[in-house]
Image (cartoon, rainbow, N blue to C red; front, side):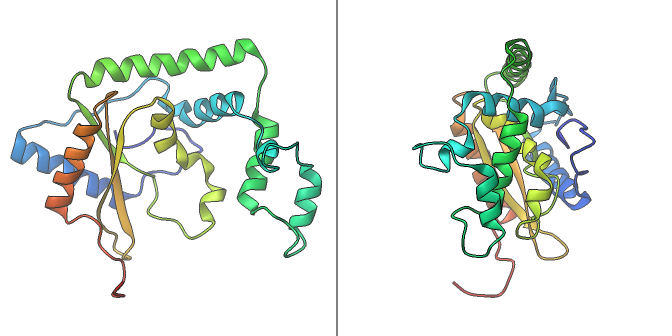
Length: 221
């Protein structure tokens, strides 16, 4: 898998990430005789929509969490407080998430039933496709590490990781190398339920061969 399925709202996968993915796949092909297969998971292009709808329908509203579950925060008041430096107890991403939560949550049982069926369909496909010891190797994100705060303006990129969290699959994140600008590039290894030992073993092999995490600067810690 090179991307999350082709959602037009998700950024295209950076060529340097695809190059790193290709290096890893070729290594396993050359040294272990494992031929990679490109796969398309059903409904993967709707990953963000599925994840966000299911999660918001099953969780307490973010405005309730903002009060420590002692009430329901006044979102308009909290946004006004944020506009005055030092007056808000919450960071902007939390407030934006609370707004989206209010707009996005659905109480329509038929609509939610449709999303849950999509989840079950994806889970069944993955379970059958991966079998006893199969793995997916795909980008952690379509972009190389963004600047601080930049990810808030590209929320759909979380679909690369969020959907596998929703499916309850074991995932190991693997630093691979540095980009041409010295920014870390990573991939994720995903396997079937209860196969944590497989993703960890693959991650250890990737670390051994490709060097694992490399400091992007010369600073010594």
